[in-house]
Length: 113
Image (cartoon, rainbow, N blue to C red; front, top):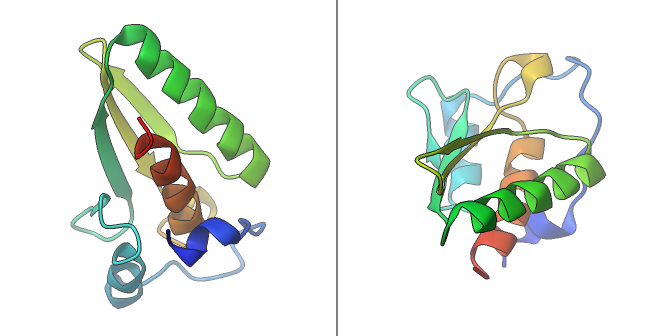
């Protein structure tokens, strides 16, 4: 598993710059199940749960991790079991290491399903 899972998200109050495409691509190699947006500002992972209740349980588990890390994704549930999880550091309008830390921790959960 990625060393990112051993890290903790750091507070970001807009005092750092968002990753450029090169930096984002470097981190993406550690979270290969995620896709990066064309503008390199968001990473997304899609996941199909077993059913509606399983999807809701996953959302709740992701929410608990997000609260621990104080870094919150956008989670979309469609067609009763399809999840799309978007990560971006809103304070800087793009990606930071926090997004990839949380992505790696979410992967740990989804890969067990």
